[in-house]
Length: 143
Image 1 (cartoon, rainbow, N blue to C red):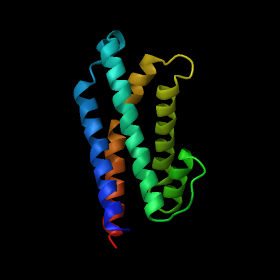
Image 2 (cartoon, one colour; image 1 turned 90 degrees about the vertical axis):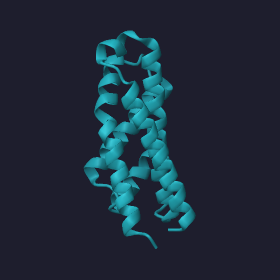
Image 3 (spheres, one colour; image 1 turned 135 degrees about the vertical axis):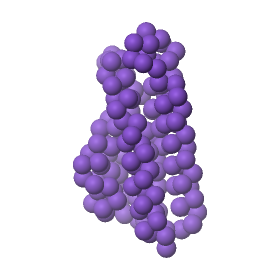
Image 4 (spheres, one colour; image 1 turned 45 degrees about the vertical axis):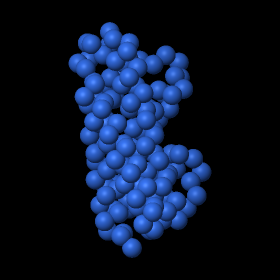
């Protein structure tokens, strides 16, 4: 992998973890979340851009390592699983996270605020797990 690709990936990982830290700081208790529109929208947008950064990092690795041409965003995670970069279980969880992002973006029907709070609260550690997996992969594949 080229040095510039690695630098772009690390930059995007830093961006992702920055969004997650912001989200951790702004995420209130559930009761306040459910009754405060401004907090809700801020949390929704922040988790949306964090997920987008995670997808971008995944796509950068697939591209930089020439692992194939994904047919869609979900397929990016399949490629990372097939190449041992992510475990099958974790890759499937990231697909769910991507699906959650789609719900936030496209507002399929009405967004259930309790479900959003539950997902936001429970997915935060997955961003750090993703960061660890990617850094580990990059360290093993320095050249």
